[in-house]
Length: 239
Image (cartoon, rainbow, N blue to C red; front, side, top):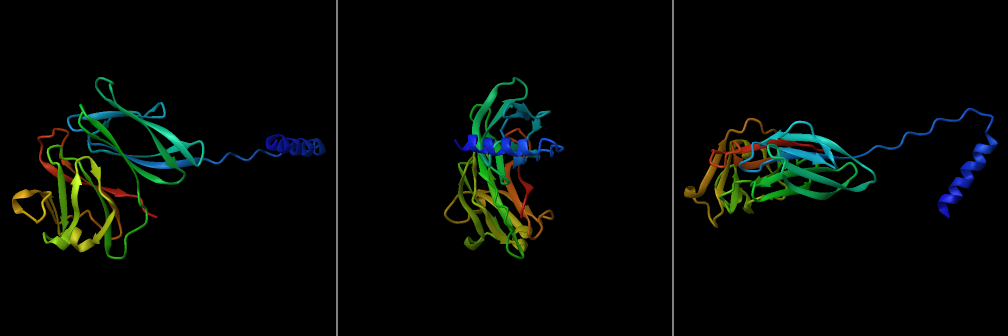
């Protein structure tokens, strides 16, 4: 009945103004969500992404960042994300994700070719407090069950992430810019800091700037799981 009522009003208005030039129809609102997409599937040099049956041109290489927007039909919409093996075309996974208008998301292909996983999380776009940096950490080291992350030292108060499981994203956290730039230490999880458990130490991180939001990924330097570990750093959007 509501649609019929609206149609009747429109029909009356058109009848009264039939001698006038028709006014142009307003353009429909474009509704978008925004995604930062990554490939960290161990052992695969590149993957092909398909978003709602639209294949993204060119395979996306390991550790690359793909930024883009997704058109939504409504303010909240289900969008299908598929990742395929760039060589064989085999589907690694295909899942429906719920996206909301004007929000930003992290989408990650992770795991291994035999056991791929899709990681999905909304990005916190609020900026950190003055003099601080906001981080989110992804653990993508295949042979480590869980890790700890320290920034600015190795004491317990400098431990910013504890017991982060493989193929998991940490909560967002803030740290002093001076601590993040001084040193970032990644170790296998232990109750107390153990020098023998250190996996990676990143010193004098010149790319880190105060007031920024970052996704940091602890992962091999190449798609070869035997390559040296590194601390990948990606800028995230902020309000």
